[in-house]
Length: 304
Ligand SMILES: Nc1nc2c(c(CN[C@H]3C=C[C@H](O)[C@@H]3O)cn2[C@@H]2O[C@H](COP(=O)(O)O)[C@@H](O)[C@H]2O)c(=O)[nH]1
Image (cartoon, rainbow, N blue to C red; front, side, top):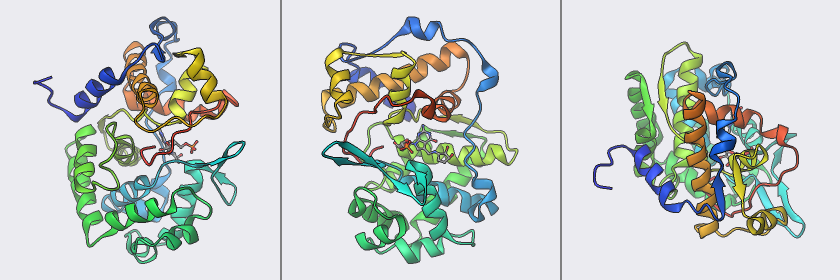
């Protein structure tokens, strides 16, 4: 592993180490049978262009970074399994986005966000987002991101990277280094890459050509979708655990196996279909509600 040059290569290498096909296997034959329909694939449209933060590249980058610092775990364990996060009728990440927009207000710059959520106090998160899991952790993440002019500096860096026409996992790794608490704890850089992908999606919506090279699959929705389309094959024991809503411990062999298989199958599917990995994940993400009530694995984590 001496000549790894990019963050993406490092995270693919991590996935190969964590891969446990006895627990979760990538089904190469199922992938080979996927119909090639390149017309269905595109970048993620996030609606950021229509928001106040969409008025400038700098503000859009800041929004992408702030939002994704707390884009994780939209469920809470309950005796029956779990309860999903909801904000005024919008569920999961969509609910978070709606609540964040409310705090952000009408100005492009993140000043109001800093005013309302910069203190690091748990109560500010509960007031802004309602009944959400891990409010203390989210408050700490926001405090780090909103400290001094760190967010503005990180946004300026992302804008400069975007100006080169190419955004990659290396830009996500830079975010993880700048914000070790909010972004630096995940070996798969899931939310950091999502931040980069949001900004890339914004630029593409603005008509800018961007080569975006990230893999944002290691969350709880992607493995669920991939299981339902049979691209991932779970061991009967692990499948039963997930179906029974048994918690899967963070960093356990099982959790790492799930995340690894998700990353590797994203790469394999994208290669088979001749599309980028972010477009691959985006089409699965958009169709995640179509796989009915297949449960997702429950890991208490701030990574995704
Ligand atoms: N690959 C990929 N993963 C994504 C996103 C998003 C937010 N995007 C949308 C929001 C508004 C716009 O329409 C965006 O498209 C959240 N996640 C991850 O999923 C999990 C949340 O799932 P649920 O509980 O069902 O919302 C959580 O781990 C979160 O980190 C994405 O776009 N791509």
